[in-house]
Length: 192
Image (cartoon, rainbow, N blue to C red; front, side, top):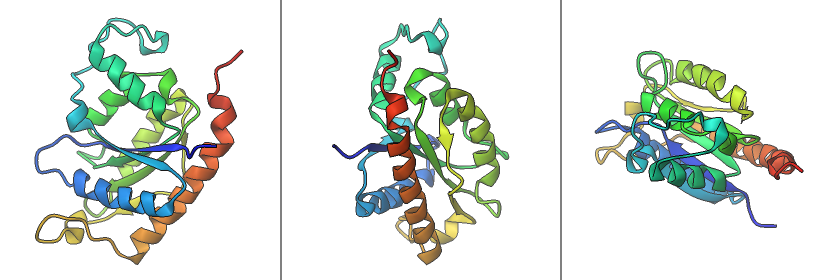
């Protein structure tokens, strides 16, 4: 059986964002973990406009090519990690918009979070995101990677440098993501 596909979604599109180096660090950890085929999905590159589909996403009748492309990307995944900042005590508008474009493509897939920010480490954004994804039948994990005062982990080249605590949290979350991805696999098959 092929390895499940893990998509690491960079939830910030802001110029100068920290999300890219954080996501690249987590991508390395996921590849080292070895249980997934790993894809990095950058919402800045996906470049979705503000939700512009005339029909509800649950019908899957997409009018725009960018939505069909986004649907194909998300459909490929068996599990997700959202790398999310905390902006004004919540997630980025770009990430919420990307979630709202689709419906069935998210279902029965586990979701982990790598959050970052100031002293709260993005925890409030994660709590809000969990409320958004539960109605989509996603399974958010208890295990997270929360990075407080994220700037302290960036070197002079703005590359992310983790520590043992963050590495251990990433490993635990990846193990649980794999377990849930396999457990939910039968539910992702088309209904008869």
